[in-house]
Image (cartoon, rainbow, N blue to C red; front, side):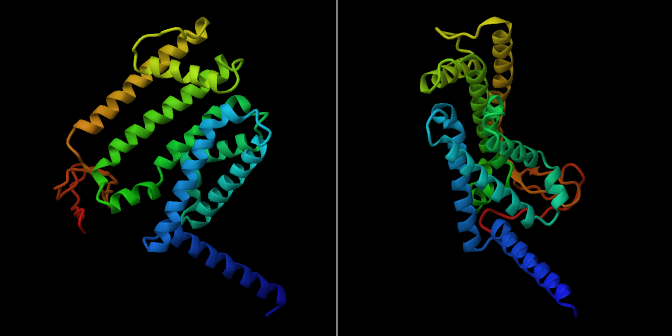
Length: 267
C-alpha cells in the first residue's frame, strides 16, 4: 500500500471516530452525553441572551469581539451537528438549519446585515425544535408539558422578533436601553391588545406593523391557552405514518391504525 493511500485511510478512520464520538454526545443517553447536552443548552441560552441584549450593548467597544466569539460558537455547533447526523442532506434541508446559516451570516457581517440582526432571536425557535432540549424534560417525567413549552417559546420568540423589528425601524434614533424598552413596551401593549399609552408607531408602516402584531399575537395566545387547558397528549412518533401526538392510553394510531407501544413515564 502506498503511503498516500495509507494516509487517506487514516484520515477517513479519524473522521469516522470523530463522527461516532459526536453522535454519541449529541444523541446518546449516557451520563456523559447528558452532561454535554446540558452544557450545550446552557451555551445556547447564553447566546440567545446575547442576541436579546445586542441593541443595548452594540455601541460598546467589546461588542465586535463578543459578536465574532458567538459566531465561532455557532459555526462549531453547526459543524458538529452536521458531522453527528446520520443523514446530512436531510439535516441541511430542515428550516432550523437555514435559520442557523442566516444567523451565522449576520454574526459574520454585523455591519452589513445590521438591519436584519433582530432575526437572530429565531435561534430560540430553532433550539425549541431540537430533540436535546426536550429529552431532559422527558427524562424527568415532564413530557406532558412539551406542547405548552412549545407554545410559550413560540410566543416569546415572536415578542422578541417584533421588539427587535420595531426597535430597528422605528426607535433606532433612541440608541441603547431606553429605545429597546420603548419597543418592548409597544410590542407587549399591541400583542395583549390592552390599548396604547404614550407610544405609537408613525405612518402607514407603523399601523400595518401594529395590525400584523395583534393578529399573530392573538393567535399565539390562543395556541398557548389550548396547550395549557386541553387534555394532555403524549409525543410518540408512529413508526408507520409519523403522527406524533396520541392519547396517553392509545393502543393504535388514530391516523393509520398501526399498533403503538407508547412507554409509560416510569419506563
